[in-house]
Length: 433
Image 1 (tube, rainbow, N blue to C red):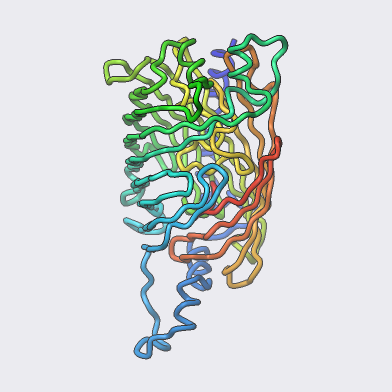
Image 2 (cartoon, helix red, strand yellow):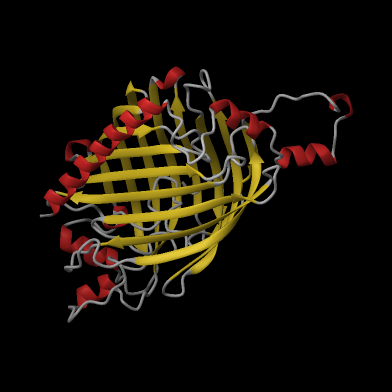
């Protein structure tokens, strides 16, 4: 039954992409908004905005540059200051950048980010992410490398609904009291995807991923944990695992900027196939879907936007993923989903997440803007709870400070709250989606 549902979803996505392409061709990419904004209008509006660099130059002007136009760099160097309930307070160094390798009318901005950071929970992370589009978007190369010493929080398997007459193991996995388990482990990740443009907006590609976890231990005297129970059930080593394989991808993209889109669509469907011949612990299969849509709401303000995000990860076949690799809250590529809950608060064999965010200007020069958002998530488990049966909501509001107008990079300060007393501040660069 689940395979028929997933196949239907896949066909709907592909049909939607084809329909979106037909609509885009007939309107020349201009009807992805409620009010049409041309590419040149969007660029001019961004450059007329006022960002943190402009503020610094206003307070501390250079005598030889007063009154002269200055070329702005697409690269920003900044302290990697962050906070969310999952990692605690973070300090480090971060470099983010953007560049267009072609004509802005037909080439999407390429972005990259690299950072080294330390948090008050003892997490040490170094990474390099990139999303590169060649001239006329003929090729798209995206991926990341990450090395980390992690301290992960865990609240069990599923969506937080109590089970009827559970066994001792099921009670531990279900964790209805939402007791917190803490794990220490090392992470070594590498993944890379290459896409080829078939026609404007549509890409197909393939890639590889290697995700290794070593030295997994739980911070309690008994050693009892959901990870141990799940690993015993499904034949995993609770102290280490390999999650390696290949990816097959279909992508459709018309959004005007990856950091902070004002209009357009981003859709990505990925079949992740873990392969034992590549060193993976199990030959498990997962279909991952990512759909985002942006509507501009104003004739006068291009940053007045309604944004929608749909994210899913669906188990295929009989084999299972390792416990710490299961999809869940905040398990997207940039750990931005699920504001209102800590990372991994809900997780399942399959997982689905959806969010709606209203983005509005506060100052006419775009230095300050705001957002209001709401999200829901659902997960299944190994004890009989089905996907889409129960949902957990969250919501919040936030302030945006324009950090770099060339790349539309915002400093994002959000406060979000969910159920089970979950709440907190979430800081970061660039929009959540």
